[in-house]
Structure formats: structure tokens, C-alpha cells
Image (cartoon, rainbow, N blue to C red):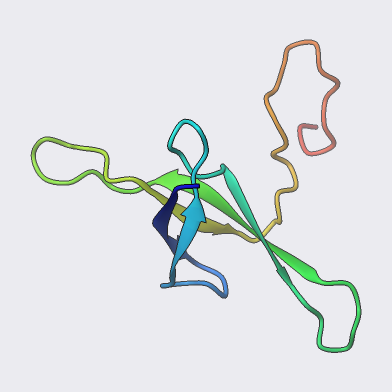
Length: 93
């Protein structure tokens, strides 16, 4: 499998560059979940990072790849596409 060095911003992984496996399209996954074990032996805490495009470079505005930004909500409120026939979510009102 092919991997891509991807920078992380925010949260505990801020400033790190980790190799992330890319899919068939050549893109890393939209969300990256990192389980962090609890020191007391309880259930692990899951950190969620969302994929975002990195800023374009130079005059041509070429796409430089992807980065992951920390999602402090942990993925709540954003789960899949919103279809017109779907039931409203609690966050939607």
C-alpha cells in the first residue's frame, strides 16, 4: 500500500508529520481517528482529525496535498451527507 507524509495541526499531534495510507484515489481518509489509552485502565479516548486541503503555492495555485486539522467535537454533528429526505439531527434544530 502507498502512504503519504501528512502534517497534523492542533490537538496533541500538532506539528507532527505522520505517514498515512492513501486509498485507491490517492487521497488519505477524510477522518483520522487516534485512540489514546487511559492511564487508569479505562476506555481509550479517541482523537479525531479532519482532512483539509493544504494552502496553494505560488502564482499557479497548485494543490499541495492534504493536512489534518484537530476536531475537538470528536466528529459529532458531521456524519455523512445530508439528504433532503433524512430526519433532522439534534444539532440542526
